[in-house]
Amino acid sequence: MSASDRHVPEPGQEFPEPLELLGSWLGPVPGEDPPLMTLATREVEGAPDARTVMVNGFDGTRISFHSDSRARKVAQLETYPYAVGVLVWPEEARQLVVAGATVQATDEEATRLFAACPRDLQLLAWLNDPRTARLPREERREEWRRFDEEHSELTPPPTWVCFHLVPQRLTFWAGDDAGPSTRCEAVRDDDGWTVRRLPG
Image (tube, rainbow, N blue to C red; front, top):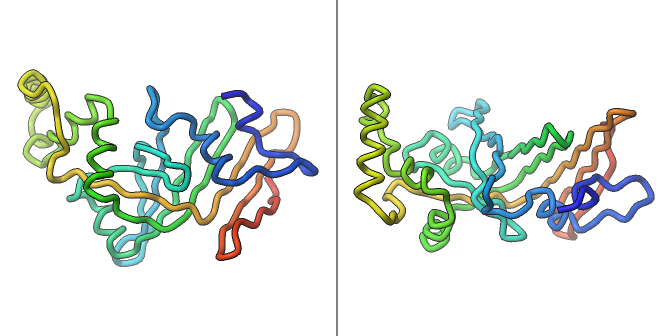
């Protein structure tokens, strides 16, 4: 991906289709180094909550991420299916904010996303339980090693669940060492995308 694919268009330049620009910023997903995204949700009682998740995929319209079905964020998304994701590339002075509705992936989609995950993430999905969490470090490592040796191929555990984040607002930000930063926001409604420039 060239640097020109990742820039925020300057005033006077044509703004690309927002989802295409989103795809160019994310790069290949899945890939060798999957992007990390801070995912903000709303507590059942209304307070904000956040954590960092791995981006499992982007199909051109939706960003996919996974969770353990027992995790707090799953209950939150079931109650209020809307989230905000923040991705940062500090070395390139870029930030992307994605806000939109969330939809639970189908079993078939979740299985495909699991198969594309790195081996260590597949192992973690199986060993991510309260009993293992309470073990001392060396015992956790031994359990991990033994499980890895005993299972050459892994399918998703019953607790594996995936969600799609469907962008309704995209905010692209790029820093500039020699001057003000650049920020553009694209908002989607029934008529399509509306783009406006914001102070950096």
